[in-house]
Amino acid sequence: MTWLGWESLGGTLTSDPAVASWASGRLDVFARGTDNALWHKWYQNGWSGWESLGGLLTSGPAVAAWSAGRLDVFVRGTDNALWHKWYQNGWSGWESLGGLLTSGPAVAAWSAGRLDVFVRGTDNALWHKWYQNGWSGWESLGGVLTSDPAAVSWASGRLDVFARGTDNALWHKWYQNGWSGWESLGGVLTSSPDVSSWASGRLDVFVRGNDNAMWHKWYQNGWSGWESLGGVLTSGPAATSWGPDRIDTFVCGTDNALWHKWWARVPTVRVHTKVLTTPNVAVGTVLQRMREVYGTVGVHVQHASTENLNLPALNDLDVGECVRGRTTAEQNQLYANRNNAGPNDVVVYFVRTTDPPFNGCAAHPDGRPGAVVAQGATQWTFGHEVGHVLGLNHVNDNNRLMTGNGTANITNPPPDLIAAERDTMVASPFTQDL
Ligand SMILES: [Zn+2]
Image: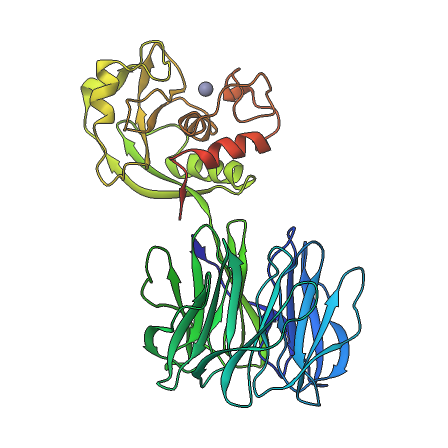
């Protein structure tokens, strides 16, 4: 997984951003504009324009996740009460939840028809209200807090709430068959916490540190250390839920615009090159060709190291019948050279020829993923052979990288990889999440 850069959404804002979860490839962001009204922007194949929800508000917005096509938004109105608006085939009117509040609202996602809302009451304690066939009464969680509450989604019957305590540290309470005690996450913080949803057993928390940068901590079999995302910020962070392979964070930048950073799983093939004979098409060129083709299916190619090998006895390499799972003594000897390579890194050896003569061969011993490329190979052989290492088979189609008719016969450079081939490549242990 990799953090991607910050991207401005544009627009001058007067509130911290708050975001809803992904749903079906859609991400919703809410902020208060310079007119003090609530504005809404969403992403689906690009960012939409801002859309006003109308109404003068006295708190920053907070939103719940989509559930079954419904998106819930909570804000504090000019009467200081908590108001609720939702979207389902258009925006509903605002509905008051009643009660005078001293904090902005924070909401959890829907789960099994239940929606949880948390606010700070006039006694400075954290209060909780939920909706399930109608709104419940308010329930105090106890404890005097100095920050607004922030709540994560339900997961397997568990709901997590984060708040800043009177010691200015971040505290955590969770509900599972009753509320647990508060647990400190440690660290002196300068922003209210914001949390993302659980996904695959992982819970992410974002806060602003005393250096005014954004910090990140996550839970997976215990709390990790804090990790800085960098950048000087003027708002508390707000994080969305995990989407497929993705987590989104929103903050207000020093220009008062909304900024967005996201963390994504980037499938990467780490390749090492070892040169016995310099190929006719340069190593840099064949790597570039491989990147062009692999890039079309979102697979990154990292060239981790290169090395010259002086192994004259293996320079015309006996590859036998070149069948996956079967290797010759010479192949076993050559593939033992894995300097700098991790267990799932792919090592490609440039030899003078193979015996019998092929452009390349991807047969390799277990635990030593790699391939050979011959001096006279084409510009596509390198990517083709690594494709075999990642589990791809030949096809009878000269438009495709994996043509079995020889990459010299490719008719439409750069050749194609298809979606099913991408799935196979990404599922390979030799495609790593970097
Ligand atoms: Zn092949």
